[in-house]
Length: 386
Image (cartoon, rainbow, N blue to C red; front, side, top):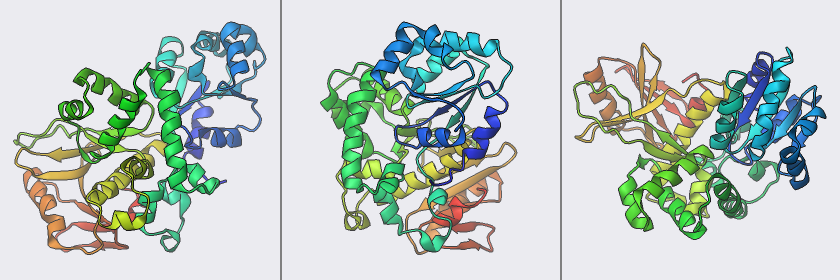
């Protein structure tokens, strides 16, 4: 089993809180990890129809079997048990009693906020990070391979070709999870909406444009965006609020958590297609952004990432907000560094008065330039403290 960087944080939270909730997309490795960490606890899958029926019809009797705690998998399927979990944990002083997992963040948080607020610690587990798969740069494949293959565990653990695994994952997600969150009646239209959104990865989210192309109203599009966000398919990168006396863009940018999923939705099945694909730069940007997100979620930290763009078109792909310092980052998919890579960083530095700036590109190694800017490769970024 691959070591997951979230392991130590999960152990720490379980020693402090009575209940721990581990959320994340389907097939991100949640069940495997919590079963490994909490080997002494009974494991209960609420995807099992018989188990779910018992938990729904007689939640008190169901939980009495596990008065010393348990791992409850896909617990959002049985909202009836949350009030009873509150009663059990309130009568106990033991931390880490129950571990809840769920692939539907909206339903899980809704149930927790109603019955278990203040008793639960959260941690998001996303698919593998690059540094979890490769401990040396020499072992890491070409970035086109990573973009196409994605980072979902079954593609690696079970050696399933991505062109076979992702279409089935999309079909299962649409037919099961989408119906569970909200009764979407026309699944064919929803899947077309996902494909249109995949073509906009790394772009500002324009609800009106999506509504026109999908053939539905903007309220429905907004609702469907919420579904994809709460089930960890997409991540919305918000614009930074500081404007430096400029009129700034206020719409979020949309990224998919996994580039293999985007490639499947776009019909990209070979690395040779990626080399000249018009969205290769956006896919690489999506990979970098989500790797930065994983660094923070694996530590249980707030995701302090934003982007910045003014009305004249000047843009910073990513801003790390560390409170007293902003770190601007430009993301470039090329392997050869040129002066164009630094143009927006130098412009932003002139506005903000802050000196640090980083270019992340698909080459290798790390450079510190005389102008104070840094250049770092993909693997170096994944293993750094950035």
